[in-house]
Amino acid sequence: MRLPILATAILLLTSTAYAQRSGPEVTSWLINPGGQSGHNGIPSNVQRVQYSSANVYVSCTCIPGYDIGPWVGNPNEAANQDFTFKITRTPQRNTGTPVATPLGHIGVWSNGVSVFNAKDARSYNNAGVWNQNAIVVEGPSFDTCLGHPAPNGEYHHHLNPRCLYDDRDSSRHSPIIGYAFDGFPIYGAYGFANADGTGGITRMRSTYRLRSITDRTTLAGGQTLPVAQQGPAISARYPLGYYIEDYEVVPGSGDLDEHNGRVCITPEYPDGTYAYFVTLDEDGSAAYPYTLGPTYYGTVPPGNTGPQSGHNTPTEAVVTYAPASIAAAPTLELGLAPNPATDRALVSGITGAWSYAVRDLLGRTVASGDDLRGDALLDLSSLASGVYLLSVESASLARATKRLVVRR
Image (cartoon, rainbow, N blue to C red; front, side, top):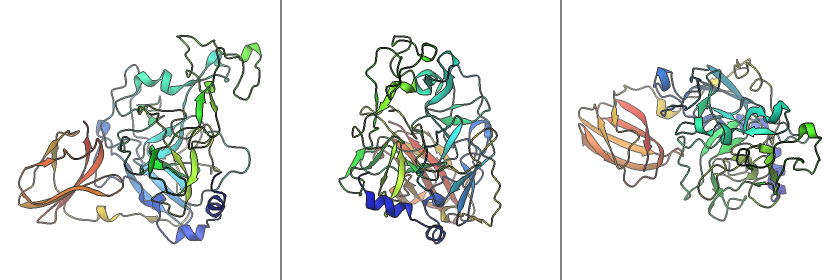
């Protein structure tokens, strides 16, 4: 580890320190501001965030606010999962045997959609040794936002959720886009070049590389497998990368560790934290292990993983988080079209004077205007492709917030 002093300090964070502030683990969620619905009319994004000094409880439907589907060749349909995930506020490094990220949800994106690992639940000859890479095998069924539903209707992403944030913005540190179930944050693809917060912004590089093999008779550690556990030879049908065991860790080849994260300073954690990063290659394609690595960095409390999990009920005193942007106020029936937009979008349904602000997912205002009247076209030509929040307030103090997607 490049920052042993910083890492030690982080591991000594106490529950008292967390209790004294709401913190990004409370405030980073995209909470539905008032009954908005997504796919099939299901309430979208996070429905409620509750917290104590020890835990955050994130209630969600697993349906995002952006459009999803269709899923070519996938017969499943996205459905309301009625999840409440429990995120510890005092995450700890696991100093024992690393805990594998299991099948099913292994974390939750900031909009309440599930994070899945790189596997697709099938292996060569059902031997459980050569596990299929979901991005390769299931990729054709992903929608334009790179997600799809599981047999139980659980919509999820195995890789970079590109409709959730601007994954091409290399000019600034990516936002927190979720939390793993060990309590550590998941960031987008870009971070500070140096773990101490210096050196500008760079794409976070995975430390995993494809192995130099022509057959599948050994594992990455050099173990020779018995014939019954060997995989198929490298071929057009089973190309290198078809199985996750085709990859190996090459220390020093990237910015991240074997869990796909590092101890570092981030905008939300100026004193440092362990953080996972979504990984992309130089042309913007997903790079293994995509989100979290095959194992967690931290310890994983019970309740979120395994069959029928994700339905936690607080057994401690909790406070409901109420961000200022969701303060009670008259609401507008706001029209916004087209959405996704390119250079312009028409805002309609407002009488009298009004003002607006467009904010990115870090809460920074990237466009604004005031003293507009009636229907008006917003100039979006200066905005990069990505997801934004459009906030409108009229002279009568009626307000509305809409998710705005810009695509070039």
